[in-house]
Structures are given as C-alpha cells and as structure tokens.
Image (cartoon, rainbow, N blue to C red):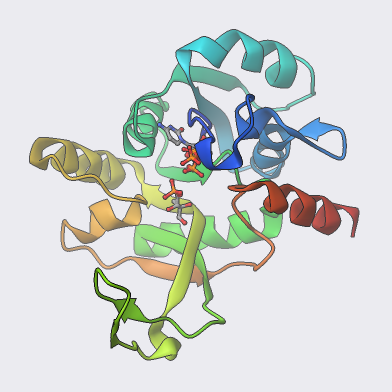
Length: 227
Ligand SMILES: Nc1ccn([C@@H]2O[C@H](COP(=O)(O)OP(=O)(O)OP(=O)(O)O)[C@@H](O)[C@H]2O)c(=O)n1
Ligand SMILES: C[C@](O)(CO)[C@H](O)COP(=O)(O)O
C-alpha cells in the first residue's frame, strides 16, 4: 500500500486557554505533536507525513519537533487555514500524487496506536472511506435551543468519531473540493464524503485516543502514557 499521513496542527487551541498552541505543550517531556506523528512514522505503508501548521509556527515546528526528534519518514510542513477543514485541504493536496490512501489525523490526538492506524488503513483499502470511532457510553439527548429534550436517539447506533479518518486520495480531494464549492463546513472529513453519497465505514478505535482540547485532557493523556 502506498499511503500518506496528513496531520493537522494549525489550530489555535483556544479551549486550552494557554498562550502556546496545545500541540506544542508537553506530555512526559515531549510535545503532543511528536506523539501524534510517531504512530504514523512507524508504519511501512506510510511513505510521507504532511504536517499542517500555521504560518507563524512553521519555524517553531521545524526546530522543536521535526528536527529535534528522529523520524524515519520524510516530513513536509505546509501552511494551514482559518478552519480545520481548510487546513486538511491544504494537507491532502500537498501529498504525493502517486499515493493511493490518505490518513488524516488531528495533531491533538497523541495517543493513537500504530495497530489501530494499520486496522484503519486496511479497511480504507477495502471501503474507500473509514473513520475510527468508539461506541458512546453516555445516553445522548437532542435538545432544543432552551435545553429541553427533543428526543433520545437509540444508543446502539451512536459512535463518537475520532481520527485518523482514512480515504482514497481522489475521493477525499473531490469531497473537499465539492464542500468548498458549496460553502459547506464540516467538523470532520467523513461528513464531506457522506455528502457525495458514499458509504463511510466506522472502524472500532480506542477510548484512549482522546483529543487534547481542555487542560484536564493533558493530565489524562499523561496518565495513559505512563501506563
Ligand atoms: N484552523 C485549524 C483548526 C484546527 N486545526 C487542527 O485540527 C485539530 C482538531 O481541532 P481542535 O481540537 O478544535 O483544535 P483547535 O482549533 O486548536 O482548538 P480550539 O477549537 O480550542 O481553538 C487540531 O490538531 C488542530 O491543530 C488545524 O489544523 N487548523
Ligand atoms: C475530526 C474530529 O477529531 C472528530 O472527532 C473533531 O471533530 C475535530 O475537532 P473539532 O473540535 O470539531 O475541531
């Protein structure tokens, strides 16, 4: 398999409330982004890693992540956009044209494991579009604008979606271009493929693959890493 990884790290980390972008905060002495790249770096099928960073942080990332740690794969830094979706688009269009499969991952998900990524890559080869996810543990309610419950979806059909999300290269580029044309902004990449009428397979991931979003997530991530 000839695959590329696109890791998006160009956010602002506003919910973290820190002056430094959360992907450069450290867990057990190393930046969050280092861990998010590591699983991909260890997989033979992945031939390159494209990291999407903000223009202002390009040099910082190069010095403090790419050069500082040893990666086996070529790492290319490209500029991000004002929304995650635009950052992803810049990443996927900067992958090598001969790659068949692209794995898109949040730089803010440092606990993803190599075996889980391999499982997603294999499924993407079969189904063209997959997302990692885990069954939700809570009961989910749909509420109105005043917080009154409208309905309670059956939990057995509800999954919390994570990254990586893995796609055939041509399909995900087409899906992003269509979303751009339509002015559609989604909160993940599979929704753009769903809009094209394709079936997306959810592959069971791991509850530990959390997204570092608010300060307590760093404590949880460090505890998982120490295990
Ligand atoms: N314009 C953006 C926004 C987000 N991301 C990346 O997308 C991932 C998931 O986004 P999120 O957790 O929302 O990160 P931030 O946008 O940084 O966080 P916040 O919404 O709290 O500002 C992160 O790795 C983030 O760096 C990105 O590359 N470009
Ligand atoms: C793509 C994603 O990680 C799926 O869970 C998530 O939607 C991105 O996070 P955001 O907070 O919506 O940017």
